Image (cartoon, helix red, strand yellow):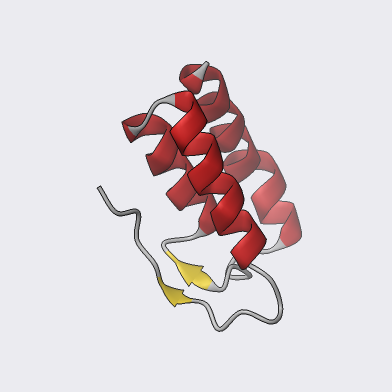
Length: 71
């Protein structure tokens, strides 16, 4: 399942992200990089929770900043 999600993230980064415009994420690493790392290093359920929490925090009211995936 993780391989499927990783493939979908890579497709998003290649085709959708350039259309939406780069540099719009408030965090470093970007949300897509964070999610990609999560699905590469954790089992599906853990990676899903980490990814959803990160995406929910990436909003106009968030300060953003450096927020790496913690091992």
